Image (cartoon, rainbow, N blue to C red; front, side, top):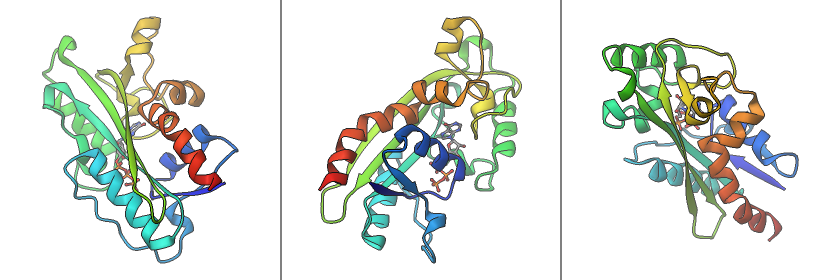
Length: 202
Ligand code: ITT
């Protein structure tokens, strides 16, 4: 089967393709010529994921997925949340976003540095009612970036599982397969996979 993921983020596309495996071919918006800019003005991850998936299915007639994701930091009342990709002002500027996060948390003590990644994943099949699921991943924000895997805030995020294992590795230090097993995105995709399979069969 084949699905279109409504994203221009190549690293997000690669993660999603890796998680669904060879069973499904995942294309991104870079593969669709002249695709219009999608609005991302929803107040929640779920709203944004639905907007992106439904518009893409309508525009292309393809079975479409969209991931809207981000980091919610406890000490910042859930910021940057839906603004995660553009928090520093430039869309997709991972380094600038990470610098801003470190600066905002400079005076926050270790015991109040909790945070969670969220992924809302929407599936839109032309002519059908769309569905959306949510995956979450809890952890804490460290004081300096470590690791080269992943993308976005991964070098600053130590998942709870790393603390339980005693190694304190950031999600940018996990192997790709380890990240996929634990991550917000991995959980969301596995929750949606049965419905995706049904859509691909019909
Ligand atoms: P599309 O909208 O084109 O899919 P985007 O990067 O703008 O791409 P989002 O609006 O969903 O996507 O923003 C997601 C941001 O949240 C992403 O740029 C990272 O800053 C952060 N983020 C999401 N998942 C992450 C992960 O697994 N690891 C690290 N950071 C992540």
